[in-house]
Amino acid sequence: MYRLKKSLGQHFLRDENIIRKILQALQQTPFTQLLEVGPGGGALTRHLIELPGVQFKAVELDKEKVDYLLQHYPSLQGRLLHQDFLAMQVPFASSFTVVGNFPYNISSQILFTLLEWREQIETIIGMFQKEVAQRAAAAPGSKTYGVLSVLIQAFFTVDYLFDVSPGCFDPPPKVMSGVIRLTPRKDIPAMRSQADFTLLVKTAFGQRRKTLRNALKPLFDASVLKDPLFDKRAEQLSVEQFGELSFRMLATANT
Image 1 (cartoon, rainbow, N blue to C red):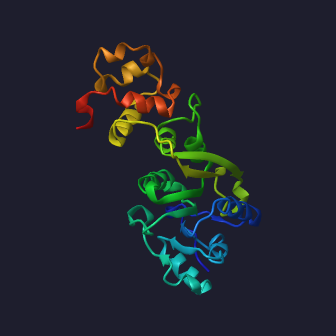
Image 2: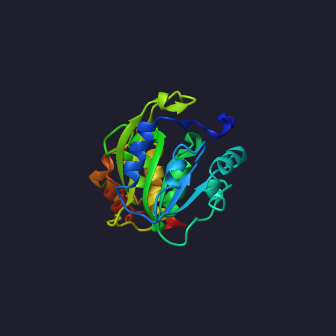
Image 3: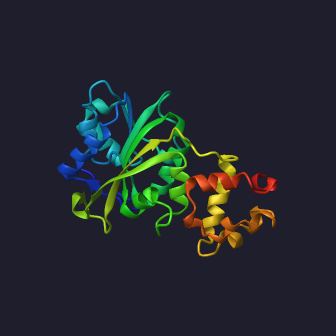
């Protein structure tokens, strides 16, 4: 068998009903190339390798799990990448779908890596710690709406699909989990540049209890800061409003 490694945030899915729901969500959108991130003990993998007409790859950091998977699922030979997902190159030359029970200790980093790959991504079905899943899907005005929400929702439509209880895993995590679907947006909000947009969002939420006028002083001319919009706080602005605001930033903000 294999050992579970807390250092890698390993909690392996074992509930067949949840596995079925993930597979159903995955197959709602057609795809021909699929990447599984963190196959672990193969709970999902054993179903994914059976999907007809799909070029499948999986990436796993843990050598022990790689050996286990290759022993139990020989068809993974040549399709199982023993790599660090956060350091790997895009695994396909054309569009592909992503699925995974993502390690909770690097889940935000995984989302930002997928954001960098967005031009090739068709759909993402991911399981995260519920708090992270909620933040990714949060609407303006909510307590969970923040940097992750805005930066992801600028480029993806995020749908919160369902909760997953701790008892569905081995070992059970101490937190609830959630499965979300991310679909690339066709109507990406206008922004001066992605770099400026990112700087603006991170600066605004860096002092989220302050008004935008106080939080964003370094990025705007004093005359611009007189706009009543700056009376608001970061969580009150929509993704589109952040995009519009990026055009009014000081020219030196992107240097």
